[in-house]
Length: 166
Image (tube, rainbow, N blue to C red; front, top):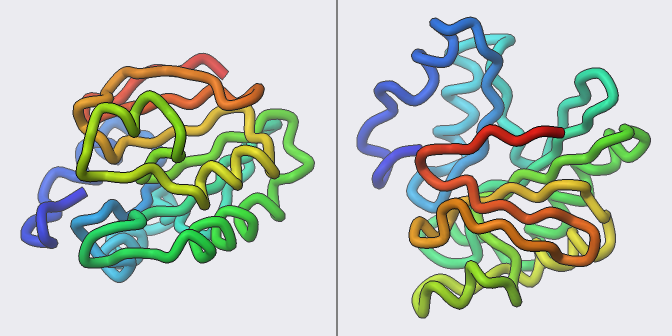
């Protein structure tokens, strides 16, 4: 969302002006406090999914931000635990979408970088929780890549985003 927490300008406002709800997670360049600040600042139409979930209709969305490397690093066990916690509130949803910043280990995305390892915690969440879709974006060079891990459709949405049919 930011680069070393230097600017939050233009991150949420344009979506709210277009009357859209915003779900966000911290990346590896900002703290959880920044994500919480933005969610609180903009009110009920913005939610930080880090360790939480949202159910809308028959779709459940849960997430975990940050990464397994960098300044605001999470341990793999913590990544899995936060995803499991968020999932527990949407487990009965017909469609389940997992949102993470870091990509799962053992995927094509991991092969496009020698710097950013995939997350074993994210991979474990996909294997055990079996979301229908897993969205990530940490490896910018992997933008647009789609692959399957089991029955889960894993998509690197990248900086430009992607429209996904659910």
